[in-house]
Amino acid sequence: MAYKSALKYSDITPKSDFLNRRQLMGGLGAAAVTALAGPGLAAGKYSSDETPNSLEDITAYNNFYEFGTGKGDPAKYADRLTIDPWAVQIDGLVERPGNYGLGDILAKMNIEERIYRFRCVEAWSMVIPWNGFELKQLLDLAGVQSGAKYVAFQTLVRPDEMPGVSGRGIDWPYREGLRLDEAMHPLSFMATGLYGDDLPKQNGAPLRLVVPWKYGFKSIKSIVRVTLTDTQPETTWNMLQPSEYGFYSNVNPRVDHPRWSQATERKVGGGLFAKRQETLMFNGYEEEVASLYSGMDLKANF
Ligand code: MTE
Image (cartoon, rainbow, N blue to C red; front, side, top):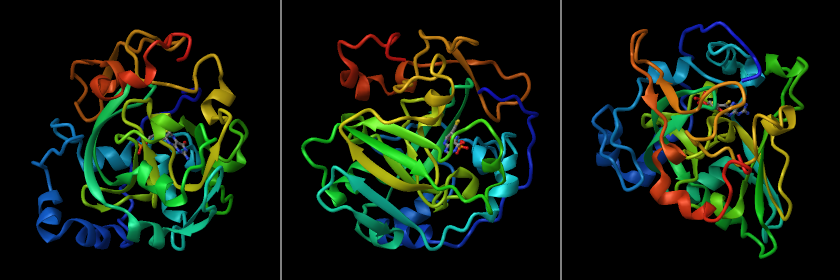
């Protein structure tokens, strides 16, 4: 993105023993959990049948600027983040605003697995087996009012635990947003786990958004606030570089970043000599999501 950094693989943060396995047991049953244990995962309706990246790839090569700008920084420093207790403030244009405890939320959610393609605006990609629930379920829990048009998300800011938030540059908290119809789409997912286990902190524990047809920076991590609004919310990368990062940020091989092509991508983990692969319209989810943007100029609304 705006930052340059040396690519560094560091040790994987030990997994925490929070929530996710228990939720899966409750939500899916033991047979499903066994099926989730390794590669060869059964692809559901919305899951890709591509081979997922290794846990090592997914947890060692990250963007989470609250913990530093290097790809290995989140794995090194995110372990400092306290994620229990955790609550999500849901406010704005909702019927039941409040501070929702994560345990109470999860008890009401239908937890499932989604193997999604993931495409970063920096032109690298992965395939990631998430566990979690559809964002729509969370919005329904709070009850969206009829005037709401957008959903805004915020990450927590905790300077004691986040070495990256004291530096200059980003105006914290990290913020993201979706149009309400995008947020209600069944592909929009709140991830609570990875590979059938807890979500590692460097990947946004305990709760992060995943919007697979948009560039990865829309998939905001460690969410503490969800606000329903009638105006388009401010989003972090757009605030920082409005000419380079738009509100929509749909993956689009025909609309280049001002400083690099978006026509191809490097799949992480492919090795030094791997060929770049072609980037797909809406990251391969065109059939599911193109109708959200019918009649819209995707170059103007990048
Ligand atoms: N969320 C927060 N709070 N802070 C961040 O710096 N980086 C974004 C997104 N969510 C980021 C964030 C970017 S640029 C990407 S590509 C993805 O997280 C990376 O997710 P991953 O590390 O799990 O692959």
